[in-house]
Length: 476
Image 1: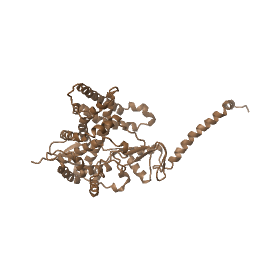
Image 2 (image 1 turned 180 degrees about the horizontal axis):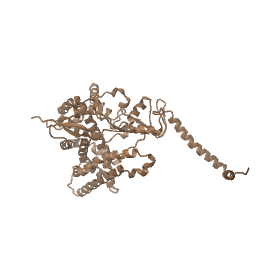
Image 3 (image 1 turned 60 degrees about the horizontal axis):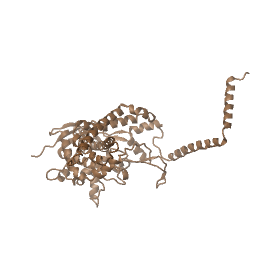
Image 4 (image 1 turned 30 degrees about the vertical axis):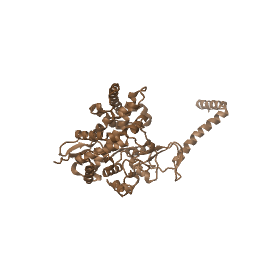
């Protein structure tokens, strides 16, 4: 039988390859084996460490697990907690610019007592603008109204009165939060390896960038106005974030871009979170009418003789504070308030080893503690009244410590929490004092409340849900 030409050719190639391999120094071959072995050993070691963690949804493929997570991470966290799980999740940290954090800590927070009366004035004006002035039941869009109120009140602090009432600027601040959510969702459903190519071309991302461009134009206008006024020795600079940032900004750098970035961070850190919190409380108040009258009584008993809200009320609104905290547990703006990534291996007190690169989260207490499953709006007020130290911050909504993570913790605690705390308390105090609120159809009970929308680890109040509201007739 004639030898196959193909076989001869393959044999020749094999011999040539073998000859070439023999020409490579033995030390190079050994080094290659060592490097390859080291890489595979590290991967094996990492996988073996990770294998010690209990896994939920182990019967599903990676793609199916991802789909389950995107459909709702809250249920998975609860399941994971029941199994003693510390799961790894990806988290994008929105870091405040150092100038913004420094300005909030050194300017806004110390001056908060002095500007609280201004916040009260802006809240009163916003409620007059966006809520009905008559005593007939009127349907409102809860999310739209909450966003309008928070954006209008915050505008005066963020950028100053010269443009704070302009609808174009208010639209930028409101649309940015909405467009950011839409862009984030569009990016999340795009495969990771395609994001660098497709993300900038997504319509949602383009819309977000256009909103930022418009916001930049308003910032530029205010900066030019302020720089012109600074030449006047008699000019009294306003107390707002824009001026405080300008006072601290290095003028040799691109001040416009810094101040625009600061505006974006303020919008994300204040307007979006405050809006979501306000919507959550409105949605809950509408189905728990039994709390409204006790809250209204507390509020009216705390007011000054002229009807204004004293600064001391921020601490004296005990029942309102408790209601805020309970709503935050049952309907949180974020279900994983504490997130850290392990930078080097760490062994816990129970012997569990956390390898480098693992992300650890502490989730909302409602996920892990059955004690809080029943809604009790005055739970924390009663706990505080039973405490031997009633004046201490224990059980208060604003507290941030080793057991309370809603505002973050330690160096990463929210620097603007004091402003958000005052803004929301003043807004709800005025609203409860002067308005009645209910669900369409007069349905009541926590089970009748609008369900929250879950997408991965993002939790949001549903948009465009109706509530009924009317102004309480003023006593003659």
